[in-house]
Length: 126
Ligand code: AMP
Image 1 (tube, protein in one colour):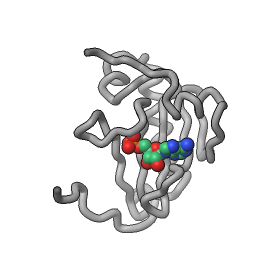
Image 2 (spheres, rainbow, N blue to C red):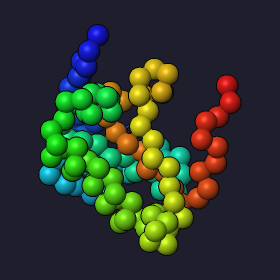
Image 3 (cartoon, rainbow, N blue to C red):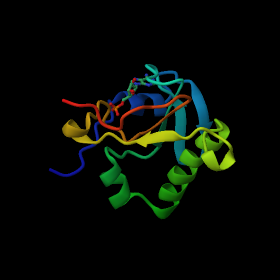
Image 4 (cartoon, protein in one colour):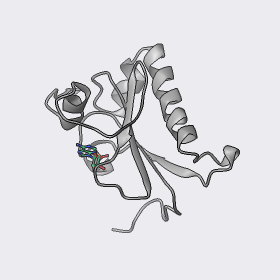
């Protein structure tokens, strides 16, 4: 078991500049870009640039600087897109799918920010 990072995953290729992306925001340790298959009017992915498979991997092994950067990068995207209710926005949903039961398709940690409409139920039936 353990955290086995596959450097051929599609987000690793994006981070190496081998595949283009629609960048929303970039920081020293994080990259945010629009999801290629948006499921809401706003659907942005935020990634740490480091080779972390899951949230657990990142939370356990990332440096304090990386953790701070990723946390603030997510906030910066939310601010940039005007989603924060404290700033008059309509709100959003923040999701990190993890592993098979979590429906994770790409094995590089990423947070989904979904907004721009009522996102609906948190978990679908079935
Ligand atoms: P997850 O199921 O949480 O692993 O989410 C993977 C997400 O990556 C999906 O929402 C895909 O639409 C998105 N995705 C896959 N390839 C790309 C790409 N090349 N650029 C942007 N988003 C992508």
